[in-house]
Structure formats: structure tokens, C-alpha cells
Length: 334
Image (cartoon, rainbow, N blue to C red; front, side):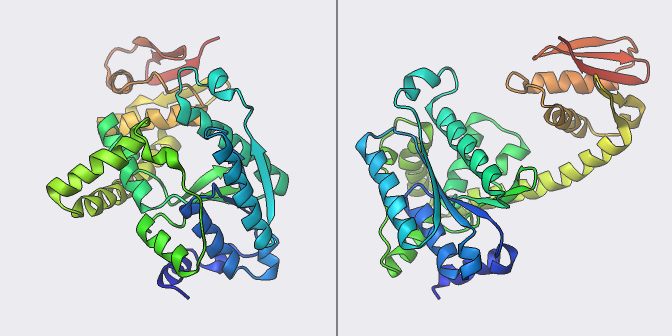
């Protein structure tokens, strides 16, 4: 067993996923091919029957995208694994980009497909091949874009994706270099996505321009520092989440129209935690957050701390907020 394989199964022991239906997202690139080989090569016959290779063809690179799909299909057949494939409509780029951007739309279609398959096969896990380099790029990207503690944490190793379905990224602590070395050690080819070499997307510019510059200027430890920062931010967010959950249990009531917050229970709570409480309420209620800025969260916190017992405000998405003496009421209008 290779060093990478041994470390992989120490972090995600086979007993934690054997005999459970698992979707393995495989693009054909080195990362996902390595993930598939690691899982398939260690799976016993019963577990192997529950591995399902899922591949979404975005049709962004013409015939190369079709060749990726054919490669994944051939690899899955060689490993005797079940597959589920889907391709985007040929004109989706012109029709669907809108204001979200190409990458966001592509990801949305891909995960919608994964969700359909997960429900069909009653999957317990969706496993993706995000790795250490992806995490470093994500943390740096979010720093540049502007983010809070949660965003600074980057990609999570595991989280609930759908009710009863976990999203797991067991390669997150492994570098791309380690992954490529592993594939070479087992003589396993993979597909190269030539679009990764272009600087059309922000992530590519971070990977191809910014990170190499930072390494040249400040040393290779830049990668370690960013990766460590992401882990520390995740640890901080876990503590914050526990405190916010306690506030939800003691200070927030749910009704048919929305939520109400007993403001006297927030008197000694730090404003940052109060803002995080409102972020959690918005998330739980599935209220739109795209236009909610730091200023909006601060306004909500100020309303909860205000001495004005009749204060009112309206948040983006037509969320009405008003004080009713000791209670702050939040409801979506219309």
C-alpha cells in the first residue's frame, strides 16, 4: 500500500463507508481519478456494488469534453463499477449564464444532477476530489473577495449536503503533487483540462499567477500558512456555531409567519454573535441573502439592542423587521 493510500484510509477508514451507497464524482482529471482508484481498489465486493461513478459533461470544451466522458466510462467499466452520466444541452452557455457567471451555472447544473442520482440510488455519501491546493486557492480567493470567519474556513472536509446524505472530501489534506505521484506509482492515466491553463477565470489567475508570485516573493511556506489559516477559521466557526445554536434554543421562537427574537436575552451577547444569529435565522428560513451586506446585519443587531420599542426596518428580499416591545419580529412579506 502506498503512503498516500495508507494516510487516506487512516483519515477515512473503510468501515465508515463500506456497504453504503456512495456517489463518486469523477471528471477524469487526476484528482477524481485518484479518488476513484483509492476507493475501488480497497472496496470489498459488497461495497464495490454500492459505488456509483457520476460524471456531468458540461460541453465547455467541445470534443475534449466528450473524450473526458468516454475516459471516465471506460475506467468505470474496467473497475466494474456502476455509472450515471449526463450532459448539458449544447446551448446552455448562451442561455443560462445570466448574472451568475459561467462557473456558478456549471456547478449548479452539476450538483442538481448529483442530487437527482443521490435520491434515485438512496446514496449515503457524495464524495468529491477537492484537495489541499483547492483549499489554499479557495482561502486566498475569499480573502481577496472579502469574507467572514465562515468563508475564511474554505472547503469543509465533510458536511451534510442533503437530508441523510453527507458530502465528503477525503483528499482535502493531500496536495496535487502527492496525488499525481500516487497515480504514476500505479500506472494510472488521467485527463488534462487545458482550460485550467488559461487565465479566463479568477481561480485560474490565482493558481497560475498570484500564488506563484507569492511563493517567489515570500517562500513556499505561503501554502502552509493559508491552509493552516483555513483550518483555524473552521475551528473558530465551530465554536461560534455552538454559541449561536444556544441562542437559537433560548432566544428565538418560530411561528407560521417567520421568527421572533426575545431581545432581553441578547443584552449581554456580543454584537458579533448577534449578527451571526441573524445569519443563521436567514439560512434556516431560506430567506435570500445575496443582497444582505455587513451593513444590513449590523442594522439588525442594532435593532435588537435598541431602546426604541417601536423601531422598524425592511431587509432585502422584502423581509420586514419590527420591534414589539421585548420582541423583534421578522417576517417575509408577500
